[in-house]
Length: 144
Length: 335
Image 1 (cartoon, rainbow over the protein chains, first blue to last red):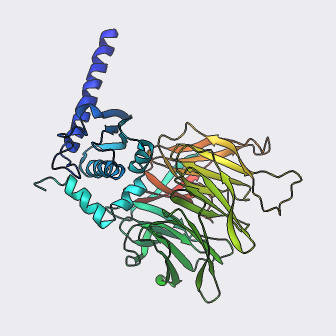
Image 2: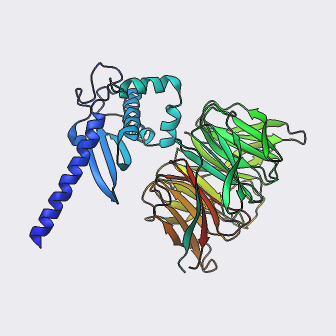
Image 3: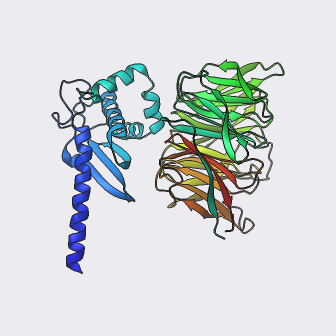
């Protein structure tokens, strides 16, 4: 019995890791709003920053914890917005998303986390032409 | 006493966009929907199916967040992220833009008509609640701007019988407003939710208020009688008499209290629709107990944003989702 459980849980763990990698592949190429580098290059996101949990029936909960390079509030929210938008557009499997700033990286992290995870705020932000333009610049792949 | 929700029809109302809100007309024969495609659509039943009767696509430049019918059914108000509220007049099967209410600094999140039909309230991310008066010549005038919330105001709703208004905010609070000396003021602030309060609903008698939140709970608030029970005091005192927790997997975006049956429905970010009923209301009015009578885990393929009970047909429920669909359900309390 132990052996069976061991095998099942390892298979399940592998599945979660694969899903996490799928997610990471989508976010690593997002460009930083200020610098000419990707979020991966700047260590804003890392493979470890993606957590995947199974919600049931081919649906997954994705939790991302990112570390903005600068303590500037609006840039952190902008990165959060980019993560929301790119994942909404590019993830092929059914998911629910939670995006947070890594604890301790920001003084107003609760405020930022709340904004990023409010879908009404996100939707309204994307209807603001200048904000939308900034996000598009960060998320659009060179060959899109 | 287990209930069930039966699907009657699913409609792809706002393709490739979110459907944010659905609202039944007072006669119960029409359903208005609105969404991220900036359009409002009116649906009516033809035989057994709901068909689109009218499309208002040019009224707003951005997402239409909420639509609300006037009590007489002749007008429809639409609140938009473009910072305006449009009032539409119904003539036969058509809707014509009557006027556009401006003033909010940014997205209008909600609009609601008072039962008298003479007052309208709107709320916005600009943290304010505006109260508008309508006269016999269809002229709208803003009579009060109240800034009680410290953040976005997500929802406003009028009391079913009194001139009392409630608002729900991103600041986790609920505010209650009354007119005092010709000015609208916040007379009570209800605290308790641990995150954004998304929506509110009064019970049929207006004795209680249900609030739903990002904290995944529904709270029931009851107006407490102060001392000698004098109800003409300007002060409002409401306390939380029940919290429904552990039922919802994610943010609860909407709550609706059925005028006909007293059943409470919720729209949740876990794609589910739930109906709650009160257990023997006479036991202890100060500590009501609600049980979950029906739960549809995958009512929609994505977040459910709105839930609305038909005002004339008991058990008929409309919901809508992030995938642009709305659905009509029949709720049976004993199945």
